[in-house]
Length: 383
Image (cartoon, rainbow, N blue to C red; front, side, top):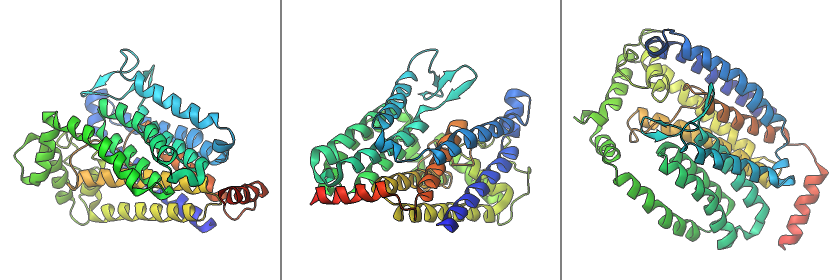
């Protein structure tokens, strides 16, 4: 397991270094235009990186994950705080509407995105609940209805913001945790049939969202304005070719490709560093997935397995969604690339997820009489 944790550490550090280097070049034009400082976003991201490592990654590594179960008020408090944050974004002066969505909390000089914390909160809340109910996960009320209620509150608020990228991630996390824990497939299908139609209706009722879907179906040859992001992203990859145009030589970052330092930073990387960069990033996330799965499979208890599985799925699914959008495999939707895109809140949650993986990993192969007693007790109770 030490080799697995070391590999995970090196992979995350590599992605963080790539992210900082790429942000240093991708954000210069936008930063100069908005703040008259080409290094504005780069410097802020460095500050967020230091804070995230110290406050999120180290804390999540030091914080014994068994406390989530031993102190039942902890996951309730965490879930409640995030839920309040998701509500406060709709209040004037506290939240605010940016580019048509209510996503941010304005706390003086700090701007936070509660939807990012919702991803962590749903993993913790559902993992603790599923571990607590044990074999009763097969029951409809405890194994399906209650976790669906926890999930539904977040999904409803995220969809109303609207933030369909975060909505998709949270729904994926919740459904997968329920599935791997043993919720009956018929219960999952029933919940999906009840919950998915309102989301589809919300999308279909908005002309801009439908236009994005039509543009995606038509591909990069679409004449729709909604296809502009995809067309510019594909052009960036074409410009880069196999080896790239060189560091800080991107053309697309000169306001041709919107959100070059956030949602579409992967395309700038492909342009400046070429196909080799794109493949390298994919390999890095594949290694991260492998490490996360190994930690989950070897976790000493069910709670550890669920937390490790959820945090791994969070990082990999976000990366898959982002890369899928940038390459045209999915409809255009804003979603950060973990460890690489600019954004403090996303960096905090990503490193908290990594810290949790280290937390679970360090308990593997360590005999704890309390865990042994708990496993025997649960086995007898199940019988």
